[in-house]
Image (cartoon, rainbow, N blue to C red):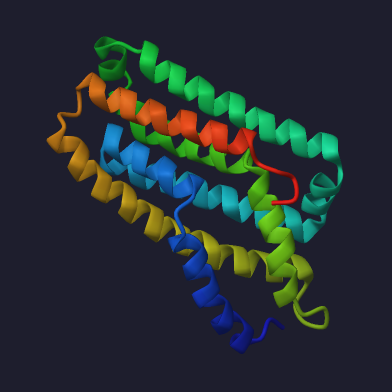
Length: 205
């Protein structure tokens, strides 16, 4: 069984990981800035679900397959790059009418986008495979269950922290006037920067 002392030791490590600025945090910041607190929380929920799925796949051994097959790693990485660039271009090409019509679906779209962004980030796979196995006890609960427990801790912490960042950013976005094209340019720039960061990601990172 996963020892409580191991789980307690994992909590500060998970907290430190979630507090470190990265792609997930920047994505939630962009969502909050452009679309408000509901979208920021929804994006954070999608990202957390993605992280939980990553740990589940790692527990089943599928993450190891992806990490050791260069082709699979590259496909996931470049799919993420293309998707982020697509989001950036959509913001630059969108008009006020389209943004207004999509307003009711904004939270759902933010959730789906956050999920896809996290699932197409191969660096998450590498982190999960490098760190979590050190906390697994072979003679305890099934390995998959232990991975899911640790993944739930990571996902919950990330949801709270990234959501808080997005909510904070939404206040700034309101001051900048949410309908302004300036916010589109800022958020598009964030997406483009994340795409560049993912494109430059080294496999050994």
